[in-house]
Image (cartoon, rainbow, N blue to C red; front, side, top):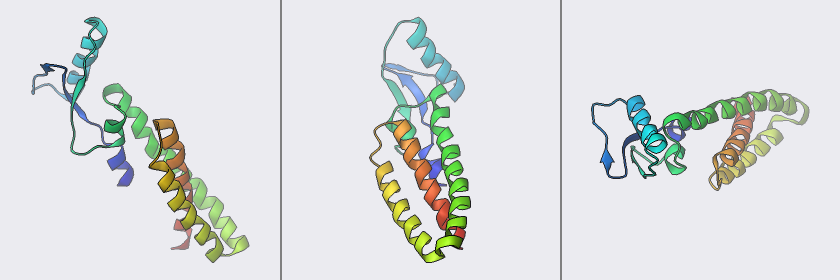
Length: 141
């Protein structure tokens, strides 16, 4: 659920002073926006409609660029799988309590660090670490 909220993409409803027809689907609105930028040699501020400020809204990833944000879910899930495998083995070697404390502390730290990410790449790396340590935490239940 959390990564779905992060990756929620905004709808583009206009460009500068131009408001698109409400009957346009999101795909058509994106094509219209991109044609204005590309063919009319016109630079305009996109008008976005969204329910909350997600990562896509914060860093202006919309239309064809939303796939970059949605790939974050895959990165975090990869970290979760690797963390689950690795920390399952480490907990057998060093004890469940020690590895659980490490995982909880590092989940908190990497989660805090992800809130200070300056761009999508840094955010993806930090969320992968969050997933890694969350995967480690999931081995105890």
